[in-house]
Length: 182
Image 1 (tube, rainbow, N blue to C red):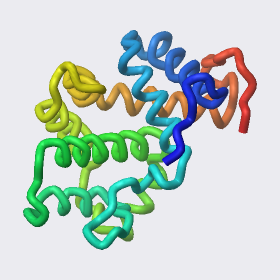
Image 2: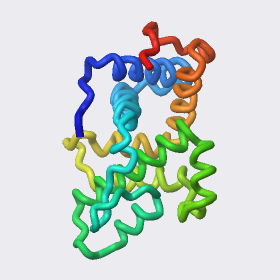
Image 3: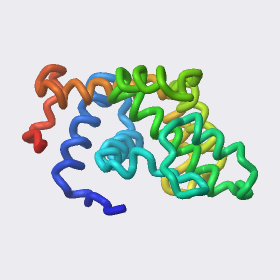
C-alpha cells in the first residue's frame, strides 16, 4: 500500500481540521490522539484501506461481524500481533464509519450481518483489547488505544465536526487556513 507522506497537503489539511475540532471544540488536546486520527482519515482515503483485512481465501472482509469471526477462528492459530492488528482494524473501521459516515453505516447494517452490532460498543471494546495486547513502547502505544477506547464517543463527535467542515468550509468555524484540495 502506498503511503501518503507527512508533508502531503491532504495530511496537513486533515491534521489542521482534526486539531481545530479536538482542541477548540472538544477540548481534547492530545497530539498523539489527533495525529492518529489525522492518519486514520488519510489512510481511509485509499479504497484498499477500507477493507484491509483479508480472509483465508484472500478476499477482503467488509463487515465488523466478519472481522470478529476471523478472531474467533482458531485456524490459523491466533497470536498477539495478529489479534492486535485485527482489534485495531475493527476499532479504526468502527470509528471511521460511525464518526464520518454514520448514515452509510445505518444503511449498510440493514442489509448485512452487522445489523446486530453496535459499532460504538465494538469500537470501544476493540481499542481496549488492542491496548491490552500492545506494549507502551510499541507504535502506537497501549496508552493511545486506551485513550481511543475511553474517549470513543468524543472522537466520533470530533470526526463528525471534521466531516461537516469538509462539506461546508467555515460552517463550524474550523478553518485550518488552507484551501480544500479535493
